Image (cartoon, rainbow, N blue to C red):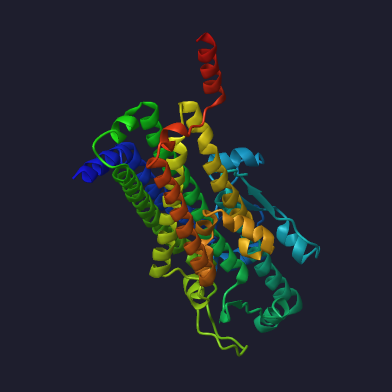
Length: 453
């Protein structure tokens, strides 16, 4: 009963309204990010409609634009410009991209037989990666106009048939295949790499902030108890110190489990939101092929990833959640030890630094490079940090590197056991009160007090 009362006390201190709000905020943030990124990518890749101003009245230009407009892929939204001040006109029309076919375009091609200019005006956007996609895809529409224009020149000037024009323009058909772990799928490696990168980037960010938040929470809680002398009162009560430590760690583990649960739910919905919107735009549809390759039909990027063994299964999420839970538990155990060494608020801030460094090093390394492709010595150093294994967990699970995953999981379990052993040693002896870390300000104050005496 005494253990239960202490556990309730610890849970009330750890699972506060602010803590629950932080968990919910993390989950909602991931879900919203998935929806925003998916929507932005879908909008950015949308070339179904372009805004165009036709200032040329030639029959040739009219025929070209009619064929572009009649195509199933692109519709033209015609606008009229009132002046040559394109910046003012873009603002007046409320558009971000505009294609302008100037007067004399058709005459230059059909009569003068020289290249004709086409103007493309775009509003520069600095809102991130997805904001620039719209400009890139809008400029691609000019290529479609150029294609139709070339076909018209070949048809009218040289009398070539549609089949001959098609052969001249596309004498070679490229069919892209990607191989992974002895599996093959008909999919562009560049498109697959973009999706793979987006899937693996968000996890390190979430783990980074989750670890810092959880560690700061437990360190502040234990250090505050020690500074306010409530920890001494609690340990002098008729209850074993192991019960106190057990209650604190149980509360920390429950808190870690809740944090991991909220984050996993948010991450799953992030992937669903992002993949659901973009998969149709950057997928490579299967069609009749002339190359005899033993590969099953792949209709979109999601199926391609499944064909290559890169899709995350429900078990993958469970294994990732297990490693995430262990990572948070390690962070909390270390924070428990460091928090017990604090003597003032300043020392709490200083003692947080080792955890921040241990979290940040693998965070930046895994974001910029593949740990498994590094040299053996550097790989050992990086993997010696227990948090690294969680940063690389999703990549290892997607690539099927289960040996690396299980080794990392076992290492985390051992590391957690060592941290728990040190915590037990500290809480069952007088080291809890004798071991301390004094900040410079605290040391100066203590020295001044000693001199006065």
